[in-house]
Length: 293
View (cartoon, rainbow, N blue to C red):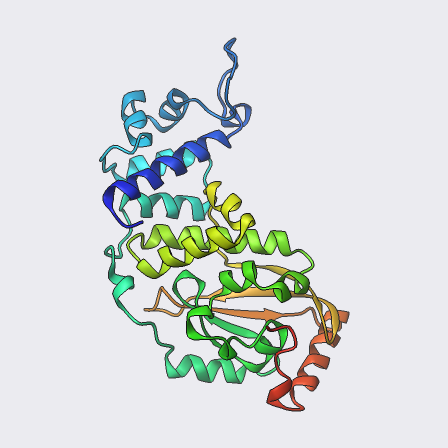
């Protein structure tokens, strides 16, 4: 990962897989008599919908060195029915993103003091700060109690996707583990497009591909996901079943850092479980990681 040729292959693979997932009948294409040997759209159909020549789109999908304009990339994204994350990933792979390639790979991420203070102020709600490649940069006591105490792990293992895919406690914690794990893989795939030259991301992907068959299968599908909000269903070993909603916030001027805050519906069984967890963790820091390794 990181060379121009490899990045072009990533782009070609993404376009082919995205094209195969489009339903021709929903793309507004007229029916014809030809038998479709493969699912999805044909290359010429994507080209027609995007307003470019078939030869131009074919060369792009073959990984040739072409730099389309922003308007053409937007048109291709519409033709393929990409969501916001998919369009952003396409722009990253083509090279339209504002961040220079390799910039993030050379910087060591640090959490601003103000973010630490914000985490501490959210004393009743779990909160995590994730960085590049889903590295866990910081967590408050409630997040450590709800998920695991990442601070107890070696620095190289403080990664949300790695924990989700390789830790048996994570599998038992999430009622909908396949859905959550797949979202973590798709988020990591999104990250690789943002910075394809990052060596640490490449090493993480290689490790997960070797150790997790689910990761290898989902990674090959080349689907991307950008976590902005959602819900998680948990079966916590201390407080039982609960559902949490999360919102993500990106601090201005720090696009590589994301704050995730997890909340519960007021006056619900999940809220009562969260209050019980807060009381439980208040008994001592040594009891703040019931689900960890």
